Length: 269
Ligand code: ATP
Ligand code: MG
Image 1 (tube, rainbow, N blue to C red):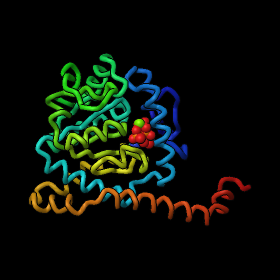
Image 2 (image 1 turned 180 degrees about the horizontal axis):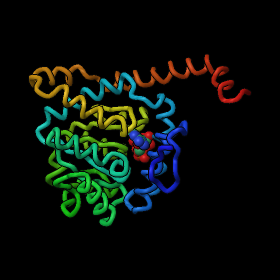
Image 3 (image 1 turned 90 degrees about the vertical axis):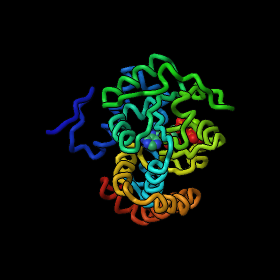
Image 4 (image 1 turned 45 degrees about the vertical axis):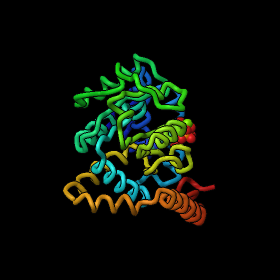
């Protein structure tokens, strides 16, 4: 039996294998001291939305992913912001994407301690990052923000024109937009303040979304700038969020119609 090497052994055949493996990665990050308890709660909220959308990358997310890839390729100074959950779940993918679009990587934490920052930087370097910002250079501040997340690197988020964030807080997303930055957010909740405030919202699990952004970058690379600009100009975030809500609406209706069958396949009422 194939299993993942974690604290508890999860059999491959478990119907919720993927989801359990993801949880284990977060628990490991928590035990290693760089994922915070609040991050575990945030993940639980994300899981709920993932269940609702059907645990797959939906059509509106693909549109947002294409726009995100175009924005990253057009950016003068793109930065990928990393927190504890992102480091635990997709550190390798962050490094891969950063290399592809020549983006800086910056650690930025809501619950900042120097120890957590240092550990996350270690995880990223372990995955091949040459440079990690936000460690001892988080000396610039984002105006109007009061959490520790206002501290940023002057060579990173502060200077960026495009910032990619995942599992971000609403206040900071709004503050980054006010600074004139293009914010690409990966957030499973289409109604979070982050999702509503971002320039491009990818409603998808960060585990699926990041590799798909890399794929989209590969597909769009080499296209004329004008073509990428058209993709961005035609992109409408409010419309995409509406499509996500309509997807959920449709899915609930279909589930409601088939609920008898679902109940019987789970053992009967
Ligand atoms: P906001 O501050 O934007 O209003 P919030 O306070 O409800 O949002 P936060 O804890 O600030 O939530 O942000 C975490 C967000 O990340 C939540 O919207 C949650 O659904 C989402 N999330 C959690 N896990 C994942 C994941 N694996 N992939 C994508 N999004 C996730
Ligand atoms: Mg929040």
